[in-house]
Length: 547
Image (cartoon, rainbow, N blue to C red):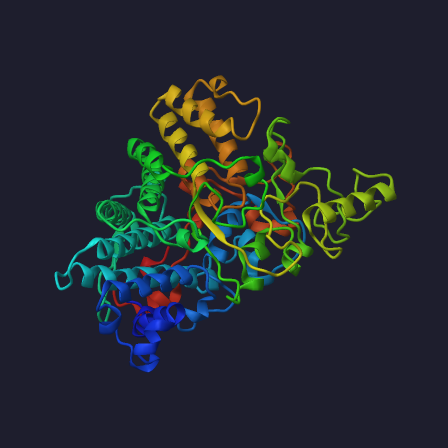
């Protein structure tokens, strides 16, 4: 299929094993490890899974032949969804890692960009490695016990996760297109050279495969060794809750509202909502009680200036955020009630300390909110002391401190959260609203809302329209910075307009094409380009397959 996948699978087992288990290396030299050895037992297969867990956040040159060191997996891919869609807003020039190119709609619309190439190959790496486990573990040559079933279930879940990521980026949205005929992505089932794929399957065929994989995963998980608990590393492992959560996301994307609601309820079982102290603690550890799945980032992993918090948090000691503090859309902020504690982590009146701020209001004398220089300076110092940023960090009105490091002001990488309970309540609420189950949607919203807002009352949203408007608000605030806005806008068929309704706070000069984009149903620029290298290497793809 893919030149890089062919090369990758020669070494994927080596990479996975040497990354994760020294004991294996004691009995099998690194130059003697083969695919046969790696797939010989359930425990050896678990090492491949551990390689996938770590591969979610490693710098991609350690996973992909030719992979760039300027992408560290989901450190980049997760916040990308809010960066492209304009949910987390840049305030000044700072294009490290091409992060500002993403806001300007440059990278994902170019078939030779690092972003479209590495996201494609990273996800197919996951698929190919998952295939190797599934194909061997289900061929009848190994005794199926609880441990093997757990391995198989994780592999099916990983494959579904990767296909869902691919289809949501490289194809037209299910609800805004014609899924039975719209081109999707290639299906790959092989685990032996030459790893030949099918041509592009339809969007419907890919979603059908995702659903099959998740249902198979759930069946295996039900009779498998349970995921351990108590340590951060445990939440890197996939379990039945993760499979149900992905099923909920998939069903929401396809308008299968009943499945979305039911799966969301099952996904959150055993993961209670966070309290105020937890919500305000920085979203930097998978040990938070409502985190269902996330990467426990090993501190020795050299992500540092490639990390999630470098790109999107305002306390990381790197130039991307020191020079360019990230802010919330002020139209969204202005909807947050005074009684909602989440409002506290978005600082509407922070001084604009950057003389090069894109809005032209940086530095004392230009900031319209301050006429007293001592007050201006004192407020900056207060913010630094409260949140742990350094004297080199700029401040800006509407800057956020929702996402911040455990060791603020350092370059330490932190965990990446992929799935949590609040999202599942919001999926349930949206699905029930779309089914005209007003009371059901209100109940799901109440369960979440009363933990965030002391005056919350969902009963005032008593129609599908008002419920959906409120759900969009809740997703914007609750999931801010967690990467969901890109797929949300495609599902809702909403464009981007940073100038509308008083403006978001973004600069048209800075944002360029990303400042305004038509809705996805009439604008194919929402669809990522297929890497040109893939079209050149894959005999089943031609230039006519390009998005």
